[in-house]
Image 1 (cartoon, rainbow, N blue to C red):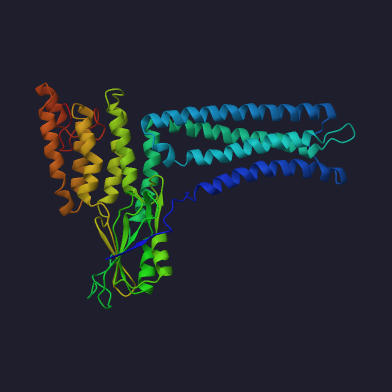
Image 2: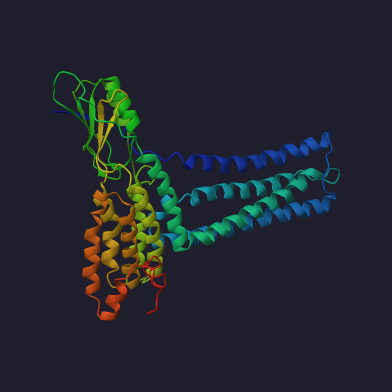
Length: 432
């Protein structure tokens, strides 16, 4: 077996951050340019606007600039406090939620408004008051205030456990629709592409990091062009050391350029992302739940909110083609095998630790039983069988509670944890 060291798997920065940063810079720079150009244009072509004498215009623009600068510091402080609150639930959530990148646009707008006011202020004189420029500064303050109010509303939602898990779930649903919904093809007559037998080539990583993405279409396209089969030896979300095998190629006939195309399809970076790693989004939801169940926090209601979203995710996963995936080309020839978690592994990820840490919580017992009932009604029969393990586990943990009355309460499924409707058997709850 031959080994080829990859030179193209170096960590990369997610592209989604750049539009927000570019827009922030454009707003800040655009404010400076507009503040310089518009007063000059008004000298030769007087335009409308509010009437100001030079002293009033200077006072207005100075107040706007000073107020916006102070307000920017206030917003920065608020976002810092939110970051600390989010990190207290899970330090990994900050890197996943898109709010903090979007907040850069707000800072760009505030900076652009302040710079605009300062540049216009420098061009106000006793013989020239750019009326439209001063009026636009007031308009920009109104728009910035609206953006701040909206941002504060999002911040208020963000600091709650329910808001955090909903934001993660939205990204996770999008990742599921994108990453694991490949069309199934009938198995081809020959699963291995033709060609003379030869020793396989293993492509190794030149750099360490987390596997952030495996670009299956790019690998299949490259494999089809050189008539090979590729086996991915790592899964998305796995950490690899330099020199670790990434891909196995058989028959070993690709050129150096084709090998580079293959290795570029395996993206390594410093951390996991939900965009191509749905299991990581599920991991984050579980992290929120088990931290809420820790003795230091003791907040089972937040854990129930996380279980609500976990149930939603499991329902979406229930009919997906899970487990190791084989991807075929247009002729039905198997070109790529890539490892993915199966239903049993995802169920363990979603429920095992919550069951362990919530063993003495009535809310968790009842909410998990409701999850199992919902999944049992909707899952395909082969996958529904895996739920029996957790039903038996809940039976064992509930039997360890101290009082028979608590045991009886813990065995009743409840979609709200405590306080929800009883079993839908047609008998009104609490009547005899």
